[in-house]
Image 1 (cartoon, one colour):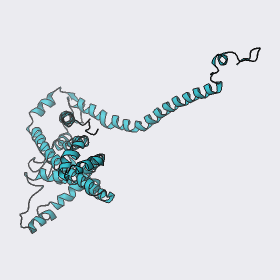
Image 2: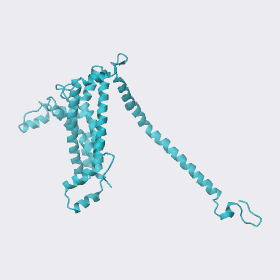
Image 3: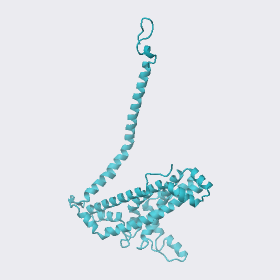
Image 4: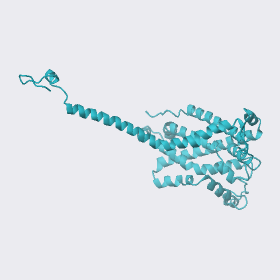
Length: 328
């Protein structure tokens, strides 16, 4: 800033007296640089945290999926290079009665598992919400989920044993005949489904309980003022407002149920026994790949399962309107 001969300031300050001091300009500009630099730093930090998960996704999910799709068009037994056969594996799959039988068994298991597990988990979640908020009770409910599928299968293999299992001993004490739960065609899939329901129902219940906790309590208070009972509030308030969470839970459990393998492999008599009554699709894929070394055909069945799950997931998402909520 220069000074005129009469002592009055000249330049921008003389025009209106509102010029911004140079120090303020420097400070403001410095803040802008700091903000931009901080944003770039946050982006780098976010990329650093995402990198391990992204690497795992690329190595253990995306690459095996693409490789499996490629192998589904080949004849491959690990001993010789893959031989391109085009759609032969898919034609064989369409004409394979064991494949369709395995798919039917899998669908039967999915319906039993999803139906019983969802109903039981919903009841447990509502009871926890309406009666108690005990953290100890939530821990007890979640405990079976901490047991691996293999351990659960072995334990229930002993419990449901036809001769010495405690489950059949209890039935005998009440005058019922012993039941071959895991060795008969009629009981094996319902029994395997109940084993997995026991293990997963607590985890599913806690997911639904978290969704119920997000519903405002004022809604229930207003319903009580209007004279609504517990059952009416469940059907008119809890269930509709729980729809987005319930939809996500159903999508997750359906995908997991279609991929059942370890419980069946451990608890049933032989691979898929008795008489292929428990030969779920994942077990048939595993047997084709590592039992018969038909990796091309196993890959084709895996791709078919991926397509089925993708279609079911999209239908579920649209039907249940999982992306929306009824909360205002």
